Length: 356
Image (cartoon, rainbow, N blue to C red; front, side, top):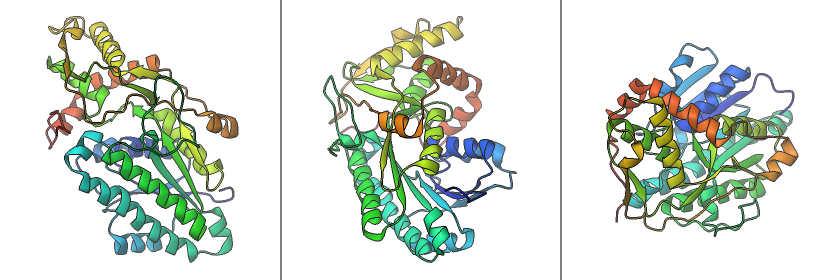
């Protein structure tokens, strides 16, 4: 992508957790001009981008990525030099409740976006075609479940076990096919669990923080022994931008935080931080709020990322340990209660989803 300045970037799903972190980072650290395309479903929140509302390098269009004609028009109007595709339904429990939405957004939506991108890209002159990039952002859940040892690599077979991960696996395959069949210049990344500021409160870490502050039970699936590799969102978006700029075409890069934690251990650490930050809370010790509940159907035991390819080829390293990132995250939620309280005033009330 050298020689293209400033970068004109379409970001799909930019009002979501990772997408908004990416946009905030790019506006601050580069001269990129960004068009954020987001449907604004329950998890999309433009308040995450309020500081950028008057920035002349940031633009927003509310749009469903399954709307092909609208996408074609936007490409012709904006004339992007790259696309970063983050728009997706992303919560496993919701995919159990309603798989159709995941199939429509994650599979049909990705196809529709690829179709619009290909037609636009084919109309560019040769230098612009060469410089163009389509970056597809995916998940480690496409690889299925690990046993107590081993790691996911870029060569791991796809074995998705939930409607969510199956829909993301399908979208990954579509992106690969558009590269090999139509020569669309693509890169793909598969990341581990993200956490950090502005995360929608249905996810584990913010949900536990908010429940604990209210003195509500902290529901943990099964015995809390499911393991995930946790990646601080700001480390993730730095890796995404690096792959967009320097990743080899047609390649996949796994992004992980080198922070394997059981769900129970995470909740214990959160409780300890809340005990420290809120010495006068009537709910101390917060561990007393832990409540083990029936496990999620088909709950994968363990995910762990081998990110050596990204580190060796592009020199990326996560800056946050889980200890430092979790402390920053808890501090942010304590200092921004107005943000998550307004989120909770919407359709999500912290209830459990994904029961059969």
